[in-house]
Image (cartoon, rainbow, N blue to C red; front, side, top):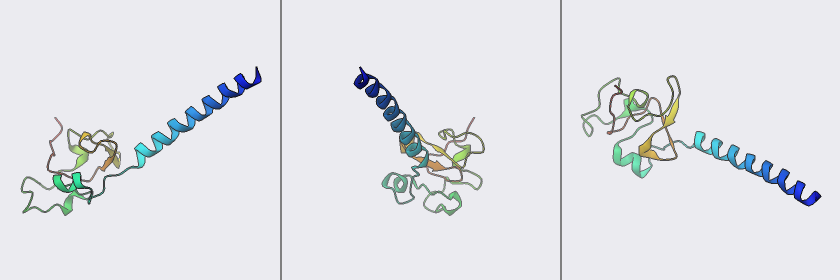
Length: 102
């Protein structure tokens, strides 16, 4: 009987630890400018460093936080983006898939 109780308690604690670790990983994994997907899309964590000759679509003031794809809340320094699954982009970043929020 005590083995069963022990199992249930440990299983619950283990599950909570796995969930906490998963949330912490999801919140901390940032897209690097050198990431192959980022390079292909011209992503920069600091959008003002975008090569305007290579990406003429870029305009001053455009940044991830004002993009329709940005999944962070207003005021967040970073947030998710479906183009970089499982990673976060900088709110002040930019990439060639930028689409202004409606």
